[in-house]
Length: 288
Image 1 (cartoon, rainbow, N blue to C red):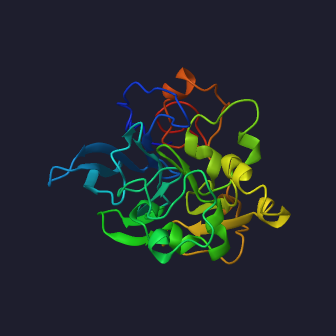
Image 2: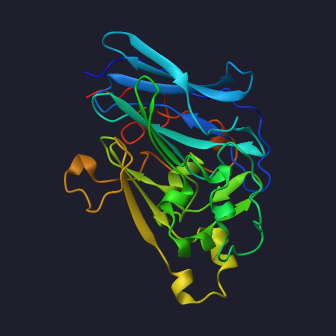
């Protein structure tokens, strides 16, 4: 049986105006596939008095806990400082990973030389190393030490920066998965941009134009418009995978079960599961 331990992560959200593209911000917790190890996060003032996110790692069998601070996450619960962030806990609980999808890392939302309404052709090294593009994927030990930090500059190839664009507090650099873009919206903004293996060890996403970028690159030619590159990353050590996994527990799938939702209160009031691949719309462990 899975543990009965349950925790709500980052659910004290303010009332959001759904203007523009901004959806409610969040940092969703996760549990390991057997339900034993749970990692959640809470927005707090760090020891220096700055806005940050404190994580809690817990072994629900022994009640051992570790706490620490996540790197690179903005406050995330305001219209222009929003965050859409997902935590993943692989089997064994020795590590966990944090993935920022369509939000800026801490450091701001105005990269040098960036054009919100124009294509970013051949951006400078200063642009590509901008702090807001950092910490897309961070792998931690359970005690909080960082194993690996991956920025957009680590992930994107030179020709792929053309797809980077922003609208208000939202940073777009990934292509949506079509099956979560029809008949509604995924209950979390980030769900449209990735796949995750059922054991939470392999993350998949697609580099290419999102729906907004398609309008901006339409005059760049068919090769640019139709470009898609699938990336798979190990969430235990942050390395890029050269071969697609064959083990069914490691093959990335849609990151949530359940139905799409309508934009508005259905999204704002959504309560995530700590095991979203298996349990929809409620915080708590799955039972076998």
